[in-house]
Image (tube, rainbow, N blue to C red):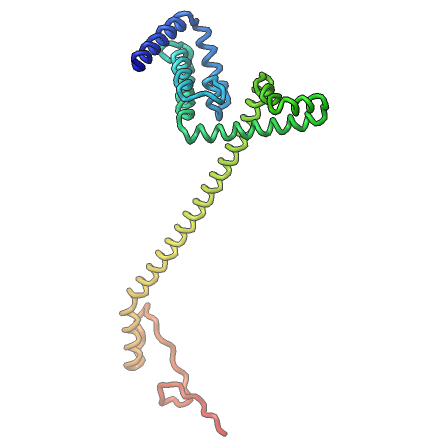
Length: 251
């Protein structure tokens, strides 16, 4: 029975939507495209024209209504496709529990800041202060339901989301810079070890030449071949000896 009622409700919504779009003019479609593209990019609630306390089901219904309004197949505006994509992204963010919770946390922070500011103002107004104390919170609730508060909240949410996004980008920039530095250090270390290996290979490659030169010298001090390194002559006190004779200390 519940499923049948749900199907009936959906069918009725479809008929209402068709009737609505049949009456929508091209100018209204164009205006909606312009509105969507002028929205604050970090707040998906603005794209879908929704309050902050809506349910996921309400998000889906509103997306369906607005997306049909600016669908590229029905709207001739040159940026209809861009607007359609922006709505899809907004719905995706609001249906993602983690993303939604993050945005609502910023909304709550904005609300607390506005209410704290209002309390400071009430302290200066004795009549308002007494009224707020007597009504025990109802005064704040009434204020939160006003258009003035909703507009202030909207602007404050923009401000906070902008600050958070700037911090995120700065952090990402620092992470990128650190990753770049580590990569550079790694490349320099690799280059150092490469040069060291090349030097060792070069040294090992001339080993036979060096040994041969030393043998020739030990056999009789033959002249070294051109290009070979010849060991220096040893200085001795006795010309008949081939070793260095250290002077003997006498007591």
